[in-house]
Length: 431
Image 1 (spheres, one colour):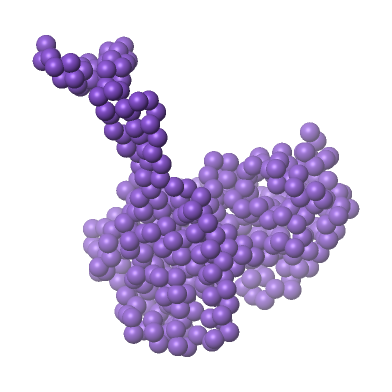
Image 2 (cartoon, rainbow, N blue to C red; image 1 turned 135 degrees about the vertical axis):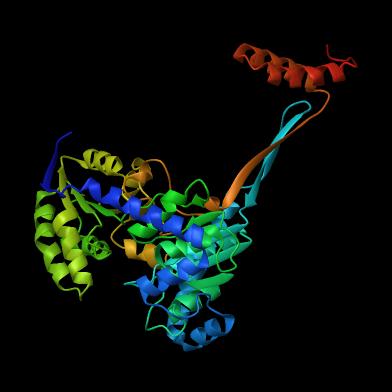
């Protein structure tokens, strides 16, 4: 299939990721060795924060009182959607028990992790939505203790912005720390400031947060290996080029390292979006404007395909975090596409709806990871564990087969554990 790049992204420098990993690993090691004192020092040095690390119940209550009622109502609307969808996800899976053969019963249980740590970004933007997406989902899954950390800000009386504290309280966070970056991640992973050690770390963050989670993976679970957010619009000649341009630029404002793509089979649409996108970016206030202009200039791509099948194949190959379809026959696209973090169907949808309030989770796979994983859901907080029970009726054949396969593999110890049960069943002593 013919694919033409009308605009192509610039190649990234691989040396940057190596330097980042070395730096983050050193800081994690320093925090693990020095504990809370090092975390406090980093908060002072990096965030210029001298206040209390743990946000008290009284400070949270005062913050809640300062949040305007209109914003509370909006947060409640979004929280209700997110909670309802998470509850539906939880109801879609269940425990099971099945008798495979007479006397051989197996099953699965779904056990929530004991403790989750949620990272809530709060630097350039105060991510109310990230607080809802992570804490709400963990609580619906049944996690016993949910901690949240968020970078402190000088303009916030309690360190963390009032609206984030209100949201965390509404969603059920058990503890909140005014701590960001690597030190915030480390506090949850290592159990600092009285937190239980997290079994899983979730939530978006900058490159330092993402790398800290990646390095800790294995010692703790994480939601995913996350890179910069990315977004794709797949559009045909029926799409409105101004809407398409804004959907691309609206996601590009995340940062100058956020890729955005337009895939289309319409040269006319492609040309018009290319003209409009810089105009849209220029309308944004700073620093959003600089972020969007940088992302579009260096990482924005426009890909022209010969037909919709080629468009779909190209989308699947890239596997974007967000995939927005603005084309005819939405049901065809929904059935055909299979590599994306979240799918937005039709011109009435937009990625911002999913980012903030529609109900689906916005913590999603980036950098092509949608080829093999989905986004954050209640399932990430649940351990699917199995069990078995063997009655006398099933024992002879099961033991014989197990011993046979084990000896063929050269695993005599395994075979003996089957033999002894078969011997006991027959009322005999093993040789």
